[in-house]
Length: 340
Ligand SMILES: [Zn+2]
Image 1: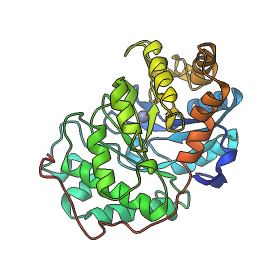
Image 2: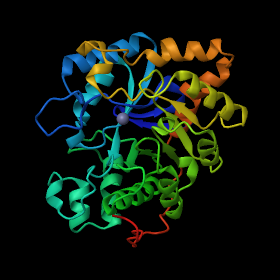
Image 3: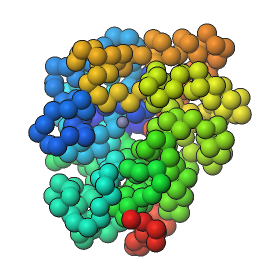
Image 4: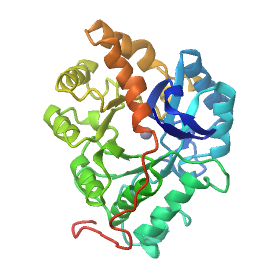
């Protein structure tokens, strides 16, 4: 198949094994820096143990979705966890999304060295893309440990900010320059069409683009029409019954696979909170899809081949490096008139 860029180096994609397409190995997201919240997954012993549990259940790869230092990304510790557990980890560059208040007025809303802060001051879209490329081709945070994919997204499901648009367009350009894929955070599964429009406007093939959290908006035709463009969808909410029962998600999977889109769907659990992990007194942990959800799919008539596509073949294909090409909008800063 292809080559995937992990924190331990480039790996043949057939070696990844069972893969969760959007997870969190280390994270400090959502709270002010220094404070510890439910979103603070940063204790070494607990996080290492969490990945050991995943390995013991047969987990092969985790796609890590904390793209910056300020989100808790730590290349050295990611690599150490991977070496100790044998679980492949693919780290990300990029930004998750703008600040929830959508303020565009001052760079001081951001950590001084963050991409969005710089983007609001004097960086061009190409400068942001240069930074993403350097993290994929040279290394992250002063190390030679490389990112393998690019994250972008919007904090709202009805609008986007100027910084978010610059980050999405830069992600598309860095994706073309490096061959690494892009996947976007969506809030409540919304704004996927608008994100896709920006990506396609930059000239990135839809097949190099994935949309996370889309199952928060369990709308069959919405998903089907996006899949028709060639983009991938990541369902990362199995088992989270606070949103809706899994039967809804399973019906969607059944219909979309029957429609012929079984090669563009990936699963994960986005367990970016302490309360999802045994190590902090919570649950169900990173093994839930493997031990509960896949067996249920099989019991409900899904074939082993279909489940293998979701957990092995599709992430191996999606996270493989593609052929590099020159971004068609290089040299231009394109910001939609309706960006906040
Ligand atoms: Zn996440």
